[in-house]
Image 1 (cartoon, one colour):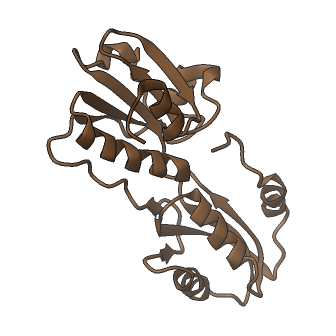
Image 2: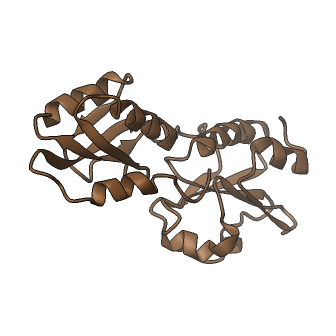
Image 3: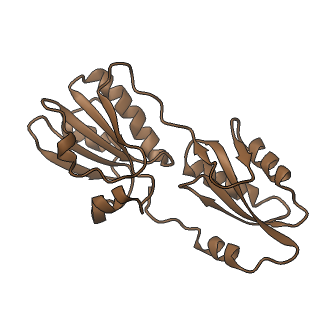
Amino acid sequence: MPRFGMALLLMLALALPVSARERLVTFSVQGLESSMDGDQVTQELLTYKGVHVATFDHVHAEIHTRLAAGVSDAQICEMIQKLAVGLRALPTAGQGRYVPFPDYPPGSDVVAITRNGSRVGPLERYKVAGHTTVFDISAVWCAPCRVLDQRLRTLVKQRPGIAVRKLDVVSFDSPLAHELGAKLTGLPYLVVITADGKRRDFDGATYEQVAARYGWPK
């Protein structure tokens, strides 16, 4: 998933002075699978009369809108909730939620190192002795990350000698993202440290690319 979005023009539109016939409202959206879903919901919302501007904040799962004065919050919430099963919209900021990643199979060697994008120090300190350790650096809003996560959940059932360590980067401006530095240009980002201590980083790689490198099942 690319590091930078394409919503600059819409953001500038939101920054323009609000007329007496308009108002700015932020809607938190719950139940999204990824930022791609949020973008689709936002684009659909723009087709409704009275929605002058709408931009999606993928990190916080919020839609920032510029609405005609006669459009109510309840109308917008209803519009959003009709777009997909399981969606819920709230006319307030700070309540956006994505569907969490599914749990790994019972008995899997998987640990979440950070869920809030905090710094973690050298990854080598978290390596599991005698195992290949896969560091899955991802974000809950990243659609390709969800695909990779599903493949890793299958992999650990097939290869007991693989340990997975999860790191949610949250955003490309988080402490963890800054710690990883310029090499982090997209998600998902995998770091694999084999049992003999050899490390390899995969920036924006697919499961198939990594599996081909290590002979994992495809």
